[in-house]
Amino acid sequence: MRALAVIDGEHYASTVRDALAELPYEFVGALMAGGTEKLRGDSDYGVPLYDELEEALRELEPELVLDLSDEPVLGPAARFRVASRVLAAGIAYAGADFRFEPPELEAFSLPSLAVFATGKRVGKTAVSAHVGRLLSRDRDVIAVAMGRGGPATPEVAESPPSLDELLALSRAGSHAASDYLEIAAAARVVTIGCRRCGGGLAGAVASSNVQAGAELALQRGADFVVLSGSLPRKVPTTFYADAVRDLGRRDVRVVLDSEGEPLRLAVEAGPFLVSPNQREAEQLVGQELEDDDDFLMALDAIAEMGARNVLITLENGCFALMRFAGFGMIYLKSGSGHAFARKRLW
Image (cartoon, rainbow, N blue to C red; front, side):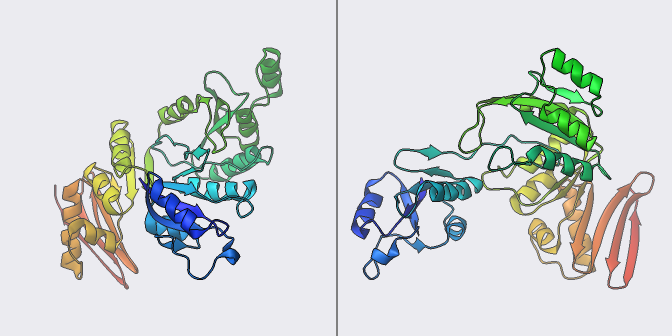
């Protein structure tokens, strides 16, 4: 397993070097956390040294960060800050007598936004309600809220609860101030209430029905779903492709904007529209695109891979292949003060 060590100058370099050789990992580098005032000259640790954590994670791509430092260089608070940055990158963080795993997130095939914080009673519910209300101005928003007093089975609040409804819930022994009811009242969006039990140091929960709540949100349907952006570390390259197929079975049209292997696999899954830029389109078709004929060839090639409609974006315009019911296939170009359209029947 590829590992990045966190070390300090309080330990003799020879002590650290021997530990790296003894431990059952493939150490690809070390992060110097501090204490360098005690080092003599250029100490040799046998691996590349880094001063910035993010740079080390990006360049080395470790599967584990192993903390070999100690107080006073890294005390509990400082160590938790390092652990948080490592876990946020999707990498496990371990030490002499502890190990934190990044919480595993379940796949969700609709655009979603998570609101979380590093502590309790800091206003997460208020922020969630505000975000929901802002997004609902021009979008169909569903909020899924998870709290310690939520319902045993996910419940849907279709409209803001009335005072009589809240009193009835309270008198029946339910939590009438549960997060989902607060969000429904403040944001005036459809809200699904869930519950959880337990909270780990890395953010995981011991038990929760939020996955059932997410499935309930999916069942409410949508006309279009936009899948956009590079996939996070450790997310399978098939994620977008799987989502395109799953949504297709629900008759949901998918607009795709990604890059690399996730883009290629998702195009083959048959999205409604794919929108690569010139560089991404060149990667898909395996050649540079220089003139109109090249771009028209690329449109055809990407459509043959599986996309129903193709939009190749440029710095000052675009090329597009669009299919319209009753009109067949139409090629479009815009930019630099000119445009053209060509039609080809099915």
